[in-house]
Structure formats: C-alpha cells, structure tokens
Length: 488
Image (cartoon, rainbow, N blue to C red; front, side, top):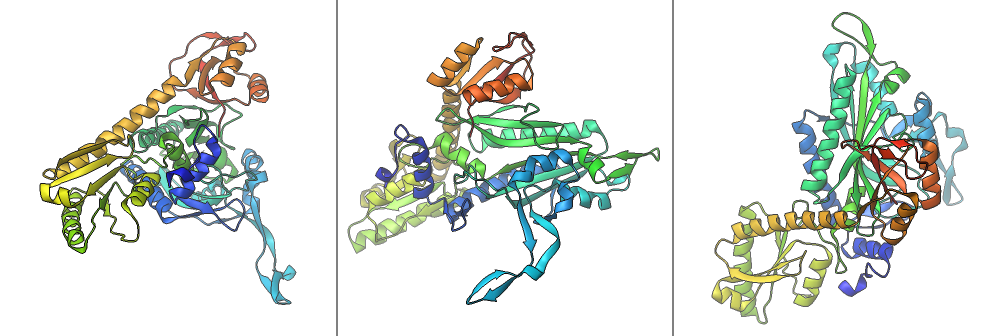
C-alpha cells in the first residue's frame, strides 16, 4: 500500500492527497469543492471535538445551536463583516422545485421575499438573538459555543485545508466590559495553543494579526500559526476581539448596576476540520499517515499470525486476552482478525492509516508469553514479556506523543530564520522557506509590497517582548520583528 503514496520530495501536494485517500480520511463529493468525510476521518474529528469541548466547558462555556440560514439584511448591518464575506456567500433565492418533463427546475413563483445566506459564520444571527437575551448586567457574560457546518464559496479547494463546506466550532461571547472580552479572547487563544501542542503534538506560535489580515468586523484577531513540513505556514485557529461593533449593529445593550444603558462587548473564535490537514502535514511520512496517540481513533492494533486452524484458535485467544487488558487501561485497541488478507498487507494498511502502535503475535509468542511492538512514528520494533502489557502500552503511547512534538518543534526551529535586510529575506524565502522573523514598519503599504513581490504574508505579530530595529524594506523605525511565511 505504501507504494501508492507519492514521496514528499517528488510532489508534496500529491503526497498530501495520497495520504488522505490511503488513510481513508475523506474523498471528493459529487458537489464540486465539498468533501465526504469517511468514518476514520470523522472519528479523528470527533476526538478533536471531544477534547476541545471539554476544555471549553471547564472554562464555563455552553453549547447551543443557531440556524444554518441567515437573512441577507443581517449581513448588511455590519459594514466590514459583509465586505469580508460578500464574495464567499451561497445565497438561497427560492423555496421549491417543480417537475418538468421527467426532471425538475426551480419554481419561479416560489422566490423568497428576502434571500437567505447559507452561514459563512454566525456573528450576525447570534447577535440578533443576543438582543433578546440581554437586558441587564445580570444576564452577562454569555459564554456560548456551537459545533456546526459552514459554507464559504471557495474556487480553489483541497481536502480538509480549504473546502466549500467544512465542520467547525464557533464561540460567541458577550461581556459587560472591554477588559472581560479581551481576557476571554486571550483565554481561548491559550486553549487553542494547549490543544495544538498537547493533543496534536503540533508546535504553534501565538500572535496578533495585522489590520489587513484580521477577521472582518473584529478590532483584533489573535491566532496560532503552525509550520508544515514543506515550509509553508498554516493558520490553525483564531480568536477575535470584536469590540462593540456587532452590539452597535444589532442594538445589543444592557443596564449596568447604576442603571445606565451600555453597549455589550463581544468575542468570537473558532477552529475547523482544517486541523486535520495540519495534523497530516505536521507528522506524516512517505509510508502514510502518522497520528499522535492522544487523538488517534485506534491507538493500538493487534495483528495475529497463524498457519492452521489450531494455531488460529490459540493465537486469537491470546490476542483477545491482550485486547482486554489494553482496554482495561483505557487504551483504544483493536484486533485485526480478517483472514482474507495476509499479514504483510495488514502491516502496510495500518501504517498508511497512522495507528501509533502495532502488536504482532504468533504461535511462538503465545508459547513464550511475549509480544512484538512496532512504533508507527519510528518504524522500530521490540519484543517484550506480556506481563505489564497495559502499563508498557501506556508508556509507549506517551513516549510517541512527546517524541512527535519534539520532532516537529526541532523541524520548525531548523526552518526558522531571522533576517535584517530585504535582500536576505528574499534569499532565505527562496532557498529555505519556513518562518522568517524580520522588522516591518507597521504600514499596510509595505506589507502589501512584500506580499506582491514575494507571496509571503505577515502570519502574526508574536506575543513576545518588543525589540527595536528598522524595517527591512523602508529603513523606518520598527518596534519588533514580525513573523513572515508563505501560507496555505
């Protein structure tokens, strides 16, 4: 199976698509730009969702659900918001079809009085709802999240990374003060960083977006940025301080303790199935998908090997005993009992699907009370006693989780540069790529010039101490180096 996967060195884009296919994560659908998420891909997303959902709830957030359809007039109430999403909106204009000559066509008499927008994001309809929920300071804060799908009409798509419809979570909170809202925005940013690094084993840099890169309608957008194996950046999550923009647009006010009416302060934040794409490109190799154990749908697969019915009975019995012990330790384990496939095929298939650990057992292992372990990340093997199986499995899974993060971090550090001149910037970008720290004068004109000439964008202004210097392009004063890269 591994030979069906293009090598990264030959064609990185095709390698990525081959991984998605061979790991059975997703496939293209009949609707151009949309995807079918297969059970393995969905199980991976569910593990991500469950981990994040728990982190949100621990910090006081609750789940709700809002409509898929948004009245067109809602989007026009916040000028920056509609400008940011206008070209990506799918619009519903009619309510029914009619049969014509064995087929169907739109019934022209069913045109809607007001067109509906298939949600590209939910700020507008949620803030229209919040107007009814909020009257006084006692109603605040509102800490709501929803797990949903959204539609953004993308012309150039790639499975998980950029599709017309995708799954995500979007949080929308309302606060009495600016300080509370900013604190919320940074709290979510930290949750995203923790999730990326501790669950995905994907190191990220936290920072704030420039004005040209911030979310439409936000005052500030914070982000986590990751670096993929090909040296391109991936925006992995965003948390937005919306100020009072949406409260003004939808007239959402509250009466404070002194009886004064004030506008509410807002945040919104989200991550999507794009994280699966980031996971693939952070850890996988030419043999297929590599998954961090904390998120892997199956953490261990047991592959029994036998030649006769007698051996089969003994080996499967032994395997079932191992399986039970692993599950008692809370490990997501599975035994591959398919007789229609040879062990070699199974090994290649499980490698391609990224299962962190494989246990192989045969008649000799049953006789000697041993197991053979194979790590997916290093492809290394070892044989141990069966005694202490559960503890050994937990130890190995934890080691793999840590090693994957350390390997990704070392790669990122190797692919990160600091430059002082624009000439050096261009040379590093062409020869090495990756993250580049450089001084910028803070003007949108210089930012646009760099983008047009090199395709590199400012990924974020890192949340670090400032260092005085001069802009690599204009020579003007600069407060700190910002992070550049070519991005997905």
